[in-house]
Amino acid sequence: MARLEITGVSKQFDTTTAVADFTLEVDNGELVCLLGPSGSGKSTLLRMVGGFERPTAGSIRIDGEEIIHLPPEKRPTGMVFQSHALWTHMNVFKNIAFGLRLHHAPRDEIRRRVEAVLELVGLTGYASRLTHQLSGGQQQRVALARSLVLEPKILLLDEPFASLDQHLRERLREDVRDIQQRLGITTLFVTHGQDEALAMADRIVVMRDGRVEQVGPPSEVYRAPATPFVAGFIGQMNLLEGIIDTQVFACPGLAARIPIADGPATLAVRPEALGLSPAQGQGMGIIHRAVDYGSHVMIDVELPDGHRVKSMMPESDAWTAGRPVDFNVGTILAYRDNVLIYRGAQVEEQSRPAGRRAVRSNA
Amino acid sequence: MAALSSNRQRIDWPGIVFAMLLSTAIILPLVVVGTWAFTEIWRYPAVVPQQFGLRFWNQTLSRSDVWGALTLSLQLSTVVTLLSALICLPAAYAFARLNFPGRNILFFSFLAGHAFPKFGLLIAIAAIFLQLNLIGTFWGVVLIQLVGTLMFMIWIPVAAFQGVDRRMEEAARDAGAGPLRVFWSITLPQAGPTIVAALLLSFVGTFYETEGAWLIGAPGIRTMPVLMISFINNQMVIQYGAVLSVLLWVPSFIALMFARRVIGGSAFARGFGA
Image 1: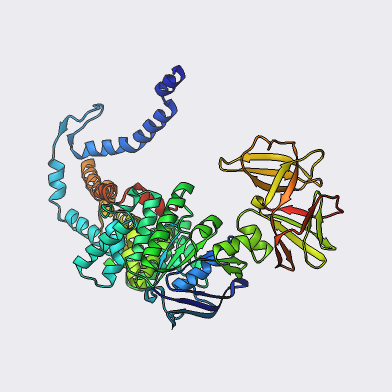
Image 2 (image 1 turned 90 degrees about the horizontal axis):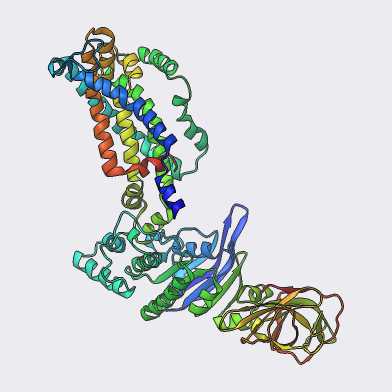
């Protein structure tokens, strides 16, 4: 159990700023996900906590103690790497026991602790296996066991499931979350997979270009993304750019009454908040494609100006390509100057032709 | 199905011809030399020797200069390989892991010894050694043979060190190991097989090196290959040279067996960047 405080940390590589003035506090037993696209600085930040990169500025404290001057081997952190980084010239037992031997633990204690951690990660009986005899998922479990056996104050996970297939990734992330909660270990987790972050994190830190875009629990980040970038990055989102005139946001085929001041705005609607109903006549849009995912149907609807939006609907025979549909807009978000200015249902919905408006869907 | 069976039965004639030509070019001379070594009488036009025997082995092995040359060659190869490892391995690690001014030029300079006609280089070095009174001495030959091992012992270990996953080393640091412990417990075992391959090449290369040993070592220092050339040039009896040739195969044969059992072909391939 430990508390991690990162204050004003920056990292400069020559002329590139990898991390800029980053501040975050991770509470005892909390699992925080650093989420962002490639090059957003999340791995650099994790490596700075682990001691593999030295910050250009700022402070990193664990339980109030400054660790920035400590080399990796002196830090109370344990890191699990994306590539597993298992030592191929050692078997599973030796991989896990390596750190304990460095700490001069008695032979009996080493054996007991290695066996206990192997049981924890579900690999009882695998101690004598060579690492190349293990599957990708088993290798990642050994990597996790190797870190956990040393009982670090802070567990650092650097995209640990990136090299695994989807099915295994989902199973392993549940196991890791379960182990993390059982041990109550403070964890910083780097991923670029939003589903991973939403499924595992107590809080998500969305990063972009080395800066924090939003910090919050998964539900908040998903339902009230603070910026259009977060809105577009987490889950699927229809982003429509236009101008609000007398409290009406309008774009071709779609108009929504939003109680905010006139001016340019970005409207964001989740596919699940964009309901469809078969239209009588021309409709607001035409179904371009409908993909049946079993649990739901994802429908691409083409607006009159050629742009497309996504709608998530229950399975039905009504969703066939070329069919005109009307929209029933649920919760909407509106952004101006990169700030969320409205979240809620529209005040009034109407279909009317609109002037030239940009429509963008990133879904 | 028919197509499948015809594929299975298809014989790769060009491959077979190529393999046979290659085998003939390599094996035939060895068979001839090996046969001569165990021959007492073999007169033209007989295809097979008239009399086999070990007479020339007894005569060759009873010569003190043969045993002297063999001992000297083994001593030279061991000393040169160890010195080369001592000098080159830290340098190779530095080339692989550190960035310093002039790194690339210095790295490529180790190719220089192999980029020009070797004999010219040896003559130039011999002139310097003459002034340093190193001609005809053991350490003079050690020095000249060290030059020959530099490329193997720098380039191959550099590739080996570069091939070690940095994340493995970082994981060891993370587990509590200091830099020296990481090198000893992770880097070296990971790069080990390829480095052993380089040591082996270095040892065998030194054992068979002739030009440098002859030019710098003569007349005081006579290694096995130098002695063999002298036997072939000066002795009317072919068998002496043949026996020495077969004796010279022993180290490379042992080295090859060792390489097969301990290292595996992949270590050589990795050393050359495959």
